[in-house]
Structure formats: C-alpha cells, structure tokens
Image (cartoon, rainbow, N blue to C red; front, side, top):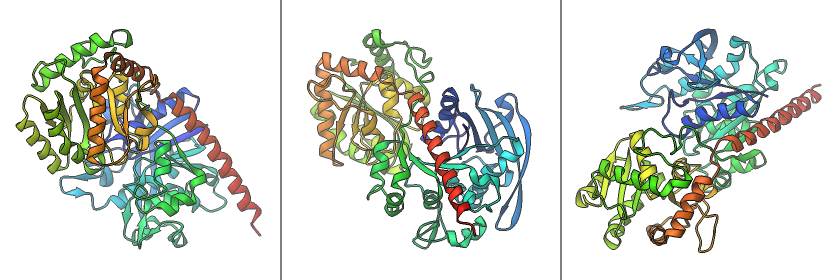
Length: 497
C-alpha cells in the first residue's frame, strides 16, 4: 500500500499543535507496519532545508489558481531521524513566511489561494517524483478540497482510481471563504451545493472534503460520534450524519521513544515503573525549585500544559482554583499561552498566591517535560477535545490525569472508581465548575491513599500509547478506501452510455 500524507504542518519542521505531531509521527509508524508512507508539506520561510541533511530538487509542478498559472518546486528530503520521504512544496509567494496560517496581524488574507495550491499539489506531485500513491491522506481543512479535485478529473485520468482519506483534527476549523473562491479552485460549479462545498452561502472547504472523500477519520472514536450532533458539529451535523457509514474514529498515539521518563534528558533523574516513586520525588523537588514554589514535596501538585482558550475549559479551572488551594493543602502550576484575559487571570492568581501557584506564560518544552515528570495531577477540563496528547504524555510519565469525559480524553483515560484495578485517571461528566471541583477533590482522595495513588501511576505507565495500534487501523482504513473507490469507478464506467 502506497500512501501520500498531505498536511499544512509536520513536526518537527512546522507545528502549531497536535496536527503537526500526528503528521510527523504517523508516517513512520505506518512504514513500520508495511505501508509506503510519504509526506507532502509546504516549505515555509522558517524552515532551513540545509539543516535537514541530504536534500535534492525533485522537480517542479504546474498548478492553476483561477486560471492563473503557478509553478512550484519540490524539495525532496527525509523527515528528521526517520526514513520517511518528505516532499517540501516550494512556492515563495505562498509559503515563504514566518507563520503557517497567520502573523501578528491575524490570518493571512490569501489563505484561500495558499491552501488551494497545496490541495492541488497532491494530485500533481506523483508525476514529478515518479511514484504513484494508492491513497491520498489529507489532514484538516487546508487540503480538504483535494478529494473534490480528484473527483473532478476526467474519466480517462488514471488518478481517479486513487482513494482519499480525510482526517478531521478539529471541526471548529473549517476553511470558510466567499463563494468567489469557487472560481479560484476551478472546480465544477455543480460541486457548489448543499451536498458539497456550499454552506450558509459560503464555500466551506472542510464540508467539501466530508462529501467528496472516500473515507473520513477523526482522531478518536468518541469525537467521531460527538461531531454528529450539536454543539460539537459546528453546523456540519447533516453532512457528517450523511457520511456516518464512512466516518471512523482512530485514536492518536505518541512517540514513546521521544517521551520516555527513563531516557528524557530534561529530567534531573530518569525512572521507570520499578522506581517511579523515587524518580518522581526527585523530579518534583527539582520542578518546585524551577517554579519558585516552596519545597513542600508532600503537597499535591496539580498542573496544566495547554493552549489557553475557551475550548480547553481553563476559565472554569481559574474560577475554582482559589477555592481548591484555600480549602485544601494543594499547589498548582500552569504553562501555556493564548487568550490574553486567561493569561492575565492566571498571572493574577499566581501573584495573590505566590507560595501555592506558579503561572508561566509561553511555551517551554523542557519545562513541560519537567511538569509531566514532577507533577502529581494533570488537569484537562476541556469543553471538547478531539483527541488530546497531554494526557498520554502524563500517563507515560506516571502522572495522573484529571479529565472531562469527552472526545479522546474519554477514550484514553480509564476512570477511577473504588475497587477498579485498571484505572489510570480521574474522569468526570458535566461542563460546570462544580463538577470540575468535585473531580479535583476526588483526585485529592486518591492522593491520600498511597496504595491507590501508586496503582494509578503504574497503570498509566503501562498503557500502550504508541502509534502502532493506530497505524494498523489506518492501514485497514486505507484498504477499505481503495476497495470502495474502485467499486465507485467501476460503477461509473458501467453507467456510461
């Protein structure tokens, strides 16, 4: 099976969140289960090709936006530290910038043309590299029109046999543009309808992908069900219910070699399951010193590593945090950035409680790793969470997640109940502050029982969070997509006069 993964970002070269992590880790996992996986991603201005080792100009491809010819070069290399072929789309006018989607002034005003170019390039690349895929695996709205481009090819074009798989990483981001973008896309006007690209009088790229892709995946089984109803559908429930038979939830994994407390150089002491208590005690002492908090190692430490926005439910946590630290002997740390109001709120709580709360605005991967190793409880009160990775990192490091029962959080954290031996964390229902506060108190109850606390730590560390199971599921999905696509093509041929 030959698969070309197309993504606007790929870690470690370009990344704004979980999408980049998936696009960087999944291809290598696929190759390990026998899939010839390759990646196509833009060559942004902040990527230095010379830093990638061996590269070569693989050729050029000709594209068209609104009838205007565009020529892009293809730089071939490997994803760092892997054997995954990586093709970087070089088009300076579109991608030679310091941001992926935006800069300090907001979203780039030409994002429609930039990502139409990337969507079209998936069909043009194979002829430049002399390699033909069986499946195009498209990631999120930026390349969601590729399946429509595929379906618009003339019947005699051999590329029509390629299957397409669209992965929705976050349904909130849909790529909505004025109807005039249809002419730029050069797609047939009949594609612009309620069962295609049109939505509320605009062109919706993600909706177009949902209707035209052979198969659709989300990054967790629960999220695949949640997005078929409001409020999680964000207006696309009819489209998703229409394609429900082809909608598959596959949980994300993590790179267990990169996230390993036994080898992580960021930690003052490495540890594994047999010495987790001693290892985490040493890491907690170092973490408290790094955060400038008192060396009260027996005080439970809750923490957050997150983007600060409404989706993550951190406004709810900010409202209950003062009560948590006043009613209980607990400490809290935050690492993240985003909503200016939330940033200000957490900095204010930290100033008012300097011996209990530390708020670090920004992102520091070394500090994030120290938090996963030295913290006791990761708090993830998300209103919705397509998958989430921080809870996987936390369990890998023997830290217990406290999560709301939604999306990938529900799929990856086994809830603690008295007597449940397989539990890995605290899982709560409801979106309110009171439900969150009760979950935090439940975590404190677990903390006071050394036997239970230790069991949850070890259970989390034993959980298989690797990409291998997911890669095997993707491989099956590709096979289903190819079979379905060929049936569709044969049916079209049979209907010809």
